[in-house]
Length: 186
Image (cartoon, rainbow, N blue to C red; front, side, top):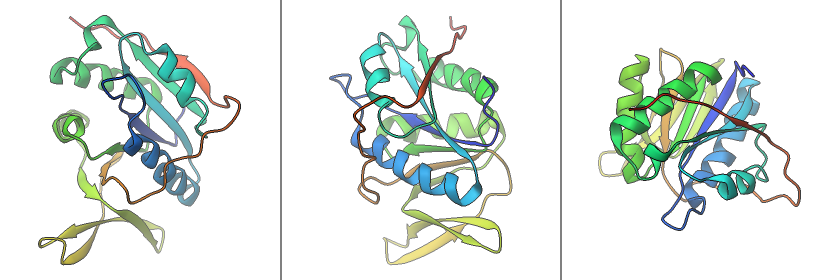
């Protein structure tokens, strides 16, 4: 069940339990990053009663979909979500984590980065490879300049701006392996 050398996509669900478009855009960005690094691409859903969303996500070109389905994750709670995310990372051991730039990830990403003792680059619009090193590109100075940032620690933790990638295309058949993860929350 261990998936070392993967890019993990944090997939957020909307109020109607549908997958947020920015999460599907992260799947596209994650696939490009994974191909550049030679990794696989996995998804992670946190929530309660997320079976339908999980089955839907398995149709978007991921290798594996990890699911943490717990009653305490019914609504976003920073400490509960962070604890569940970290327990999932203990199993998945991702080399890179991508999240959409949303209100939830703006709160969750720094918590996860701190707990994993890794760096965080927010609001990215892409990445570039240079001599084997990866640099994440983001706008700075009121979006007048594009800056490239590298991370010295792993896993890379990056939030992606919406509408910079096309959403992953839905396939007719589910292709991803769905793996339920048990977590301890109180």
